[in-house]
Amino acid sequence: MNMSDPAMPSDPVDETPDRAAEPAPKSDRERVIELESETAQLKDQLLRALAEQENVRRRAQRERDDAVKYAAQKIAADLVSSADNLRRALESMPEAKAKDDATKQLLAGVAATERELLGAFEKHGIRKLVPDGEKFDHNFHQAMFELENTGKPAGTIVQVLQAGYVLHDRLLRPAMVGVAKGPMPAAEPGPEAAAKPETPAEKPDPYHRVDTKA
Image (cartoon, rainbow, N blue to C red; front, side):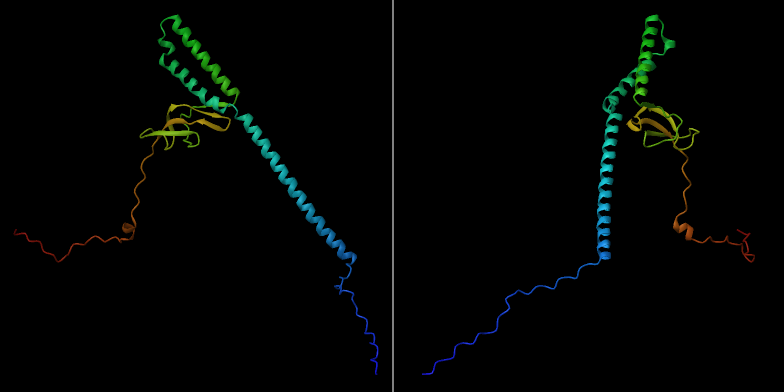
C-alpha cells in the first residue's frame, strides 16, 4: 500500500497590507513659504474683522449722535405752528394802530413771547427760513405759484407765503413761496423747417408785358 507523501509546506504569504507611498518630506524652504502664506491669510482675516468692527462702532456712534441731535424733531415740528400764530397775531394788529395802553402792552407781550420762542429755537438748532429774494431751492422751498413781469431773474423768490424751518440741516417744514417767472424762450424751428431750403425770390420777367388796356 502506497502511502501518499506528506504535503509539502507552501511558500509563506505576505499578509502585510499595501501601504501608499509616503510623500517625501518637505524641505525647510517649502515649510517656510507655507507658513508665510498661512500667516498672511490670517493677518488679512484679522484686518478685515477689525475694519468691520470699526465700521460697526462708527455707525453706532453716528446713530447715537443723530438721536441726540434730532431728538426734538417731533416737538419742534409742532411748535413751529405756535410761532406762526404769534406772528399772525402781531401782524393783525400793528403797534401803530393800538389806541389804548392795554392793547399796546398786549402786543408787547406777544412780541416778547415770539422773541423768546425763536431764541429757544435757535438755541436748539431750529432756524427760521424767510427766503425773500433768494434763489429757489426745492430742498427747502415749495413753490405755490409763479409771477410774471416782476423784474427779477427767473427762479427768484418774490413772495413768502409761509416761513419754513430747519432743525440743524434737516428740513422741518418747507417755506411756501411765489417764484418769478422768466420770459418764454423763442421757439426753435422744427426739423422740417431746418431741412427745407430757402427759395430765392422770384425775379420779374423783363419780357412780360403789362396789359394797360384793361
